[in-house]
Picture 1 (cartoon, rainbow, N blue to C red):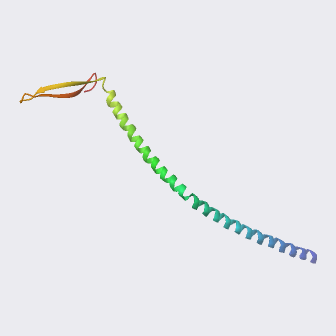
Picture 2 (cartoon, rainbow, N blue to C red; picture 1 turned 180 degrees about the vertical axis):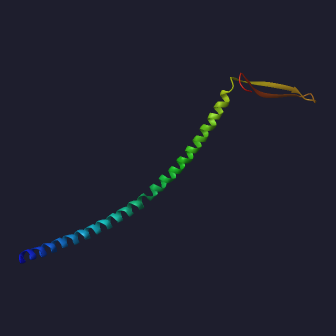
Picture 3 (cartoon, helix red, strand yellow; picture 1 turned 135 degrees about the horizontal axis):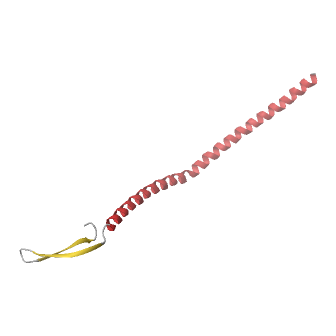
Length: 112
């Protein structure tokens, strides 16, 4: 029985030593990982800032494109309301005897 006790004491000491070494190794690995993460964050910070800036610019350009398409659609509807545009030259004579000419746009076939 004494031999089993000695054997347990001896091996429990080995196991405790292995656990202490493993714990120290794990702490070193965590420190190394923390340093790596900080280095990666530091080197990628300009890239991440540029991505944020690009994202803001894309949103602004998208908004401008949407507004442009709305304006184009409105213009297209206005043009499509008329079959044909006609420009008329309207002339009038003023009291002083001068001839005054004005071009007027008229529409044929659609709403005027």
